[in-house]
Amino acid sequence: YFALEFSILVFLALVEALRIVNGWKANLTEDTTFMAISILLFIPGMLGIIYFLLWQVMALVASFINNLVYQYEHFYQFF
Image 1 (cartoon, helix red, strand yellow):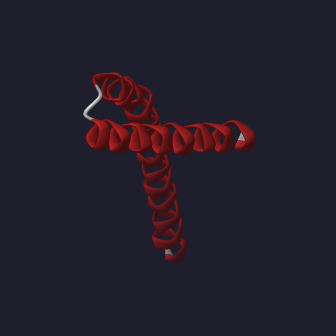
Image 2 (spheres, rainbow, N blue to C red; image 1 turned 45 degrees about the horizontal axis):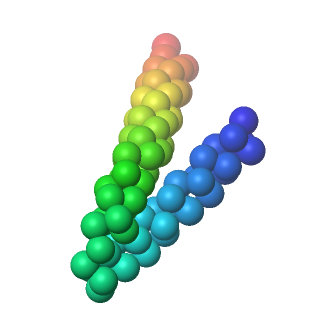
């Protein structure tokens, strides 16, 4: 599972780098082709960011539930 997450992260980094470079080239040359490529690369970049954002939310919820269970066990240990 770690390899899949890492490959998605590397893919996201490459897409973002290509998007920034194409946007920079489009700004310097005023070429619409580079701008169109930059805009199209925005979509997989945002999907990758949303994926990792949702993954972090799930990890936070799991950590919260784990903490609740620990606190419950710790509180009722004395009774």
